[in-house]
Length: 100
Image (cartoon, rainbow, N blue to C red):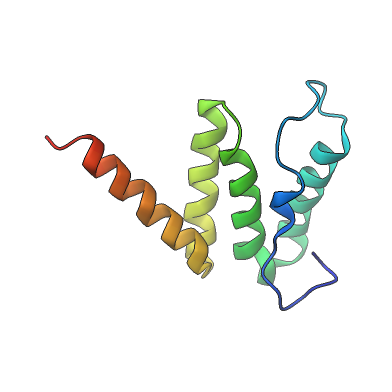
């Protein structure tokens, strides 16, 4: 992602789960590297957090889904329109699931 400064990240497609339970597989390493990239390149924070959130959304773990929502919210605050749209979708789905 650091080699493509003006493009939207798409790497989340390649590091989707399942991962090894130990967390030592290449996908987990790439995920952690992207998290570090967020810290070292604040200008890419919004799009990188979007990628990380998309990966977490693919897990069957409720805790990872909550973490993904937090990342989407932060990504949206950093100007990522894709994250803003996904958050809108989540809120819309929640509103239709609980009409009362």
